[in-house]
Length: 204
Image: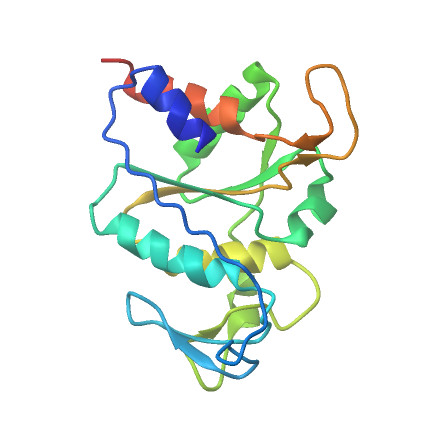
């Protein structure tokens, strides 16, 4: 929402669509359970391997909905995995990008804005970790490592072929106060993404 506000305030020459796919992990009589099969908006089925990986199920449907309008660039930002901050710590947002030129431009913007992001790989070899015997895939990897990568690979299945896509997996929280960065919620990667959009599309 912060990035969307910057895009509108900066009058960037883009047609902006914002989807807020918020979800709460709560117990109820009709909550899903491990082993359940859920069907996504695009027809793909997911075996529930872990009920705590609920955010990616909702985000997957949002990605499908976003791709229905054939966007030039699709960006999602999510506090998706603990594995991302285990890999990069609390101050660097993990990014996954399916286009090298876009990834390189984002990395440059990140450095120049001192808004730290780091590209992690969409490593195809880990796709097998999402295999399921009863669905198209599991909603979580079958091993306790590479969790940020397997989550991104899961989401990639819901991005239309040919769509440029940036997935940001961040902590979005400062654990301690520093100059200009008080303890609490932090819009990690926002300035880098805004600069990328401004340089790519200009203003009206």
